[in-house]
Image (cartoon, rainbow, N blue to C red; front, side):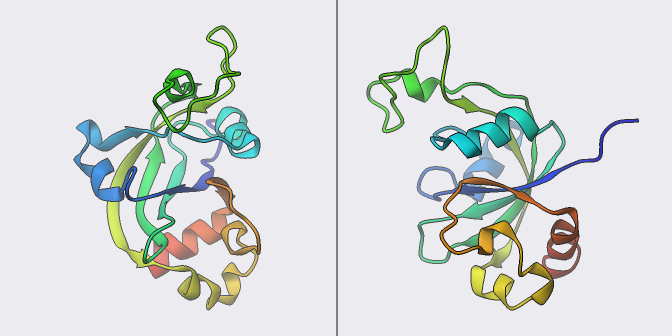
Amino acid sequence: MPPAPRYWLMKSEPDECSIDDALAAPDATVAWTGVRNYQARNFMRDAMRVGDGVLFYHSSCAEPGIVGIARVASGTRADPTQFDAASPYFDATSRLDDPRWLLLDVQAVRKTRVLGLPELRAVPALADMVVLRKGNRLSVMPVEAAHWALIVGELLA
């Protein structure tokens, strides 16, 4: 029996990769580059599996929030931006034979209305959601199955 799917919230600045960009990409799939936090990288490397659900979140914009539903479409591999000196994600200490930073592919399933933090905070059942914790700035974070069901099944239905 295959393991139950897991759920994630993945933040992207829309200037770098928006939900519209993802939907317009071949097979609606984009490489999730630029993750430069060890905890977020470890989630991708150790816990995320093909088929897991993703809440696609726009950050650092006028109206941050969940803007789409996606799924994990590949396992991890080396993020080439760490080796590109012209990239803002360049890491001079990362080695080709032992890359520090990874990426995986995310496939957009559908665009949704913007579901922002104020609306998420107004739902008591979501009070302990990781994205709502003070000081949380991770770009990749787990979402509990109950939170996923409420958001996808009710708030974005």
